Image 1 (tube, rainbow, N blue to C red):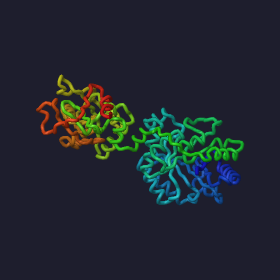
Image 2 (cartoon, rainbow, N blue to C red):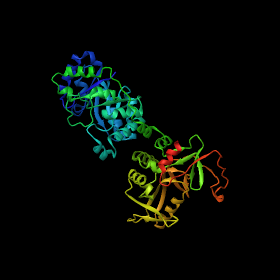
Image 3 (cartoon, helix red, strand yellow):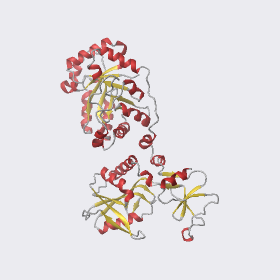
Image 4 (cartoon, rainbow, N blue to C red):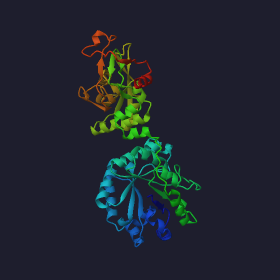
Length: 471
């Protein structure tokens, strides 16, 4: 059963107490479903001051300090609250999910130890922010910022999040119903939105997946406060979450493993039933194939890929000055990776000569002497391109410290001692030969089955190849 959280922002302590008593005395029917949000009063009189102010008042509180600090400081904050006279009245307390994983984990663990009845609310993106704002702050849209911050909170064991009503439905669909969502800044249909940019009515919020709702101005500015509260409960009576099933890609992106993510967008697939094979150069390939060009159209997938790579690189304590990318297909991946590693400089190499037998450095306006570089590729197959890139770097007195790629088809995790860090290692190709395969390339591979159907590789028509293999 949903609860109404009434914000007491901007009220003096005495006025806040008067309003709390008035609402509880006149709304006995909904008393157990009403909480009061404390924000600026806390900074005025502190935890013990609030406890003294509300001594003898039977109410539940949502403290809204929006804590965002180093883990040890968060531990101290929670310990101070747990030892105050206020803790028994507190049901929720807010922290910023943008404080990142370690802060969230420490806060949740400390809370569980000292005040297990209190629920932490992880604030995602503020409702006053739109896509342009979150683009500057989180380098992402509001929706994807909320999705990523919610994942951080859930991974830390926090099961309550705060977000706009507009993101509630996508969170429900992506992460399920095993957690709760509080949505602030809900307005009745006939109320002005004020300075808020992502709002809904109470009933719309509930249908979108909200668990509890925070309201402030529609109640505090009303002439008939009790009438507004009754209206809220009447409008939300019996309203439940209605799945819209519109977030399949987001669900796959944030919860799927790499095999699922890549197969969802057609960039990685297995040979389907029906005996279809694909011709790759002069050989016939079955079992697995990769279409990197399809995935490079999706910035969200690239963002996840480079986040995975950056995490692995940091875990190995690898530091670099420059990211070097190979030709045009690696541009988006490499630049995104450089950004996540806080690497300011990048250059790229390009195969030259009629047979692509050599490689030259392009966009080279920096001195690479003594620089630590990461070589970045979309796919490492035979390792020849990477080897040529290494030769170029070594000729310029740079040191290659790692090789990063989305797919490692090289079947090794290093090249001459340099680690190859990848998101995904696909299954080994099964190679076959048929009458069109030159004899010197047949080697010990088996002959293609007589009933096999070959899907040729159309030049520059990779997407059509994917579709033909699906059929």
